[in-house]
Amino acid sequence: MTRSAPIEPDRSRLRFAQKVLESFMFLTDEGYAAVDQLPTLVRFRKGDVEVDIYHGRQSYEIGGGISVAGTRYSISELMRVSDPEAAARYRNAAATTPEAVTAALTALSALLRPYCLAASRGDPQFFSRLENQRKQWAEQLALDVLARQLRPQAEDAFRRGDYPKAAELYGRIRQCLSPAEAKKLALAEKRSKA
View 1 (cartoon, one colour):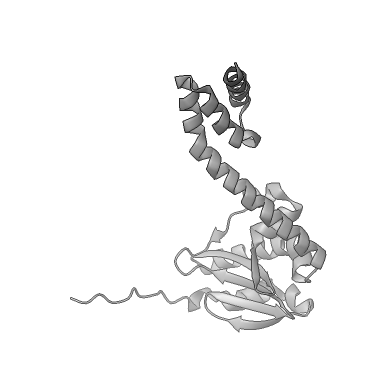
View 2: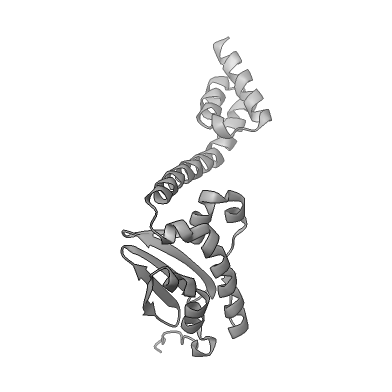
């Protein structure tokens, strides 16, 4: 028995592309042209800056991003430059009805204006800050992953009285230690030298 590909539901009733053009008219006012209008993606372009608004094929999430010279930034990344707390709270809305698509696009359009206008205008200073932030975020993520890996090992070494090992492991994640772990590090360093 052969398996056929899953049938994608007809999205024409959602009128996604038409609603994107209506909700993001301010982009055309900024000189952007809609270069792609598909049932799940609308892309605007002005010079080397592109704004994409998508409707997830499986997730039905509505989201977007901005690409400059081939590098894409998500809406939450763009928000994080000026308002990290709002970016942390931001989630793409899932929309499966015409009304939900309209509401999600209206909300996304409202977000795109204040947080992403500098990006949509291709402001080089904005993208410099964004790249620095992306680098810091990647470093923090790497440190968080390392901490999740080393923390149990450090706790075990401390419990066993292997203070040199505990000091070495805690020392590698010094920036993200809790106050209790910082005390353990200080004690492990002191006992290692004794």
